[in-house]
Structures are given as structure tokens and as C-alpha cells.
Image (cartoon, rainbow, N blue to C red; front, top):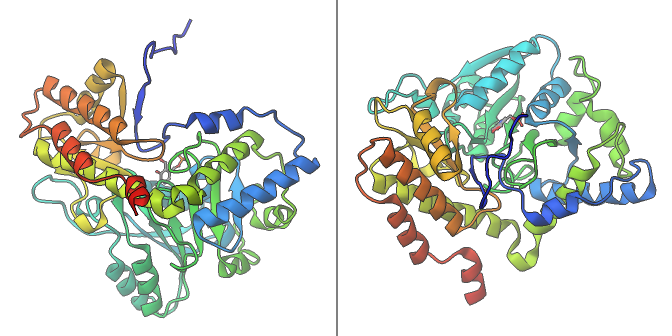
Length: 416
Ligand SMILES: Cc1ncc(COP(=O)(O)O)c(C=O)c1O
């Protein structure tokens, strides 16, 4: 018989940048009985959840919830706003941006990819995978598109493969500065409810997200937040779609229902997660963002003390959600991860695509705290030493010093 019980004692340290650990409170909420999705109780749940998720996206406009992983919501976004052969401009900031471009091509869109050229001299890794989206490159490309063939600009907010959080307001400004009508489509699958995100204020037309990261839910639901302009364009967009079509979902959502069987138990979980994240007694979303920033600082202090390079080469766009750690040349980062997993029961994110084997990723998101991170960093430090990596110093000590020296935002709030 297949043995899936790998973790006989203690909690497994799930330190990948999503799926992130699911709090017990959410697991309990998800264990409520599944109810009739056409009955009155469900309608009340649907209306509550839809209102709360708008607050998480910081939008007054519709947010569609799909019983699908994030990839489904990527496809939904493009298939609702594009017609066959449409030209879309996609910025390659890492592996997820690259996968989204592949999906667009499979939908028979003309996906033009732009990226910072070249490789970084010290690491040999692609420059574009070490920095944020370059809004000036987008502006220049849109200015050159005088015929306005480009229908959408697609960017990833928090690139989960690299640990870089791009400036979305700057991309909006670039589109406006070019006087271009393209829609702005943003993937914040791993940014939502961890890194600050403002769908309306930043002028985003479609935001794509998923359940298994900052929302602290299991994988299985994903989102499209939709601007009025995108909703209008969807009425004439001609890519084939049925399951993903916004029109029927948005209409039925007005009364709290879906055109098909929704993921009832994940919606219980989402309701609970929103209550946790939005709770004013805990400081609401601003406190959520502040604690993620602080965790990121603590983890980066550790990486610097080890004397290793952080994948994100621009401090102004460090991700508050995860940190990519580049291993020294000649060291297989996946072999290090394997040692850490087998010896210390801690899962870390693998290097994806073009940076496979060169780095690993430490998630610091969701249901996490200082001691979770100290333990995870302890696993990393021991595993790297066992793998023969010469570390400059103790990252664990540096992180302890950082966390002890910088009160958590909730303690600051209590003191105020
Ligand atoms: C930024 C980003 N985009 C897209 C995806 C794809 O989402 P999923 O694996 O849920 O289909 C992920 C998954 O990790 C992601 O991090």
C-alpha cells in the first residue's frame, strides 16, 4: 500500500510559497456540512463571501470566484476579454509570467513577450528574473503601437518563482502616459492578502488570484476581479468560452448563487479567511501587509548573514511573500532542498524553469509567525551545512536578532 504518512511526529514545516499552511480555524469552518447550493442558506453565504472578497481586492466591482486553480483564472481572464488572434503584451518577470504567455499562445493569441535582456554577471541568471516589471519598457512599446493593436498588457504582481513584487501603479501610469487603450491584466495569485494590492486605485482591469497563498485556503478556488471597462469589452470578445464566461456568473452572483455547482466548503473557508484578514480588532489588511513585510525583512537578514545572494536583485521590489536564495555555483539547490526535507521535515520551494537547480525559495506568508520562520531557517542552515555549503555566518542568529529587535506590528498597535 502507498504510504502517504511521511510525518509521524510534530508539524511539517510547509515553507513553500503556496499552498501555505491552512489555519485550524479555517479547516474547522470547511468541515461544516455541504448544503444545497440552490437553497436560501447558500444564497446568504454567497452574498457574504462575494462582499468580503471585494474588500480583499480593494474593489467595488464584481469579483468572480471559480472552482479552479489559478491557471483556470488566467485562462478566464484572457478568454473573456480577447478575440481569436488578438495581440497581447506580456512581461516576462519569471516562470509564472512565462507559463501565462504559453497559455495565451495555446489560446491562439498573439502573445508578444518583453523582458529585460541579458544575464546577471554575478549569478549568470536572467536579468529579467531578478528585477521587477520595467514600466518604462511597457510605455515605450505601447507608444510604438500607434495602431493600437495591443489589446491587453499582462503582468505578474508577485512573481512566485523569483520573490519579486512589481510596481503595478507604475505599469498603469505607463499605459496612461502612452495614451494607449490596452487593458491592464494582473496576476496576483501569490500577492493577494499578503502584499498590498489595490485593484480600483491602481486602475487594474482584470486581477487574477487564487486561494492557496495569502488567503490561507487549500488550492481549489480562484478569482477574476473585473473593472467596468473589462466587463464591457467582454460583451463583444469572441474567444470561445462557456465555463469561464463572466456574464452568467456575474448575473447570478447578484443573488448569491452560481450557474453551476460552486465549491461550497471552500467558500465556508473563504468566508472565515476574510473574517480573519479583515478583522478591525487585528488591524485589518494594513496589519496583514505590515507583518508580511517584517517577515520578509527577517528572512532576508538570514540570507545576507549566510553570505548568499537573494534572487531579487532590487531592494525596492523585495517580495514580502517569499525569498529566493541563490546557492553557490556548482551546488544543486534541489539536492539541498531534498536534504532539508528528509532530515528536518521542512518543504521549501524549488527553482522553476530557467533557474532550476540554482536557487530555492522560502515562503513567509499566511499562517506563519516569527518562530515558524526561525525553525524553517534552522532547517535551511543545517541542511546547507550538511550539503557542504560554506556559510559566512548564522542566518538563524541574524533573523532572531531582527525579530527580537523589531516588534511585531500587533505589539506596536497594542502599545499605541
Ligand atoms: C504567480 C502565479 N501565477 C499562477 C500560478 C498558477 O496557479 P495554479 O498552480 O493554482 O494553477 C501560480 C501558482 O503557484 C503562481 O504563483
